[in-house]
Image 1 (cartoon, rainbow, N blue to C red):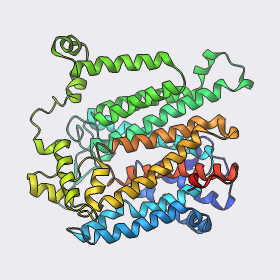
Image 2 (image 1 turned 30 degrees about the vertical axis):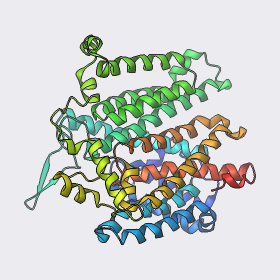
Image 3 (image 1 turned 135 degrees about the vertical axis):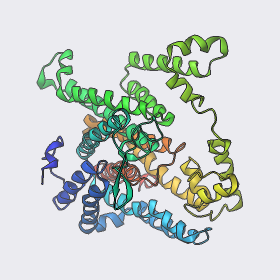
Image 4 (image 1 turned 60 degrees about the vertical axis):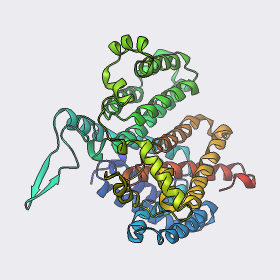
Length: 455
């Protein structure tokens, strides 16, 4: 078997707890192949989860947040029994409940900033073949169907020309999921670029003039990756992903006080949005400059004949009506599609907002509790970032990148729900576990934290 770990920078690094070294090695291999071959990658990821539970069970059970998630699971299973289709509702909980065990294990397995940096490089390395396949699908017509015993089977989930047609979807089968994945790896590309820049500039022993920083092979690779990934992200034609990438560039530019880049990106965005929404005398000359691909997609003029039932506003209104009718128990997971089809005669599996979806599916109490638990973890991570331990300051940027990437996931799911996608759901919980794991270690390194900050 090829030594996949040799591809990862810092692969020889040893876990601070020797009993978890094998679990960490399995996790790295798993996430390296997971985006490309999820059915194969999930096996070492699961082995790492089991090993961590076996080796660190007491530490896992010591954290209050894991007990809160367990109690929430019992409540969610209970209210699912009152859904319109209890079987489907319980099956839909598979997109949530098992990931609590994953979160509990990986928040203990991941304990250092070096692990965060290794995972970030793994995300970028594994994204390269996925992105290249996306270009082949869109421009070279890769994909199609293979007939097996008379039954058509999609080749790797690829759709020649993309799905929907003209939008890059790659191995994710649909442009929306691929767009969220690209948004995440793009943010990690930015974060690693800034992190590498800082580490090179602060390396006094190198004695390099500023211009020599550009000779770093890592910076060259990261720059090419951002161009390749950014181009693929544009070709997904996802407004949510475009917005997430733009905001991340602005935030990193402000974080580094690169006001020239901040001003350039802001001016470029002002021109594009003005071409879409400026009053009639002003937008015509701008539309002659800005490609129609951008302003027509932003204003939704690219799809002028879209039925009203396919708009997010119509779906939000219907979901709000469902919440009003069953505010305590909801209608059950996976119920929205059938209910909305009976109402509008159009199939829409979810209301394009994860909070609204949870409210309609599980009721307001369960939704508020889950959002509160996740929000408190992110709040603790943000407080850690704002008051980072001095001994960790050299890697502050990499932790900031994880906060940005998870925030990007949440923001994306405010307009598109990707919970049913195994890869995206797993990566989202991995980011949250990474943030939580570093917070646990900060508590140990600086002593007992105040009660209101404990997890």
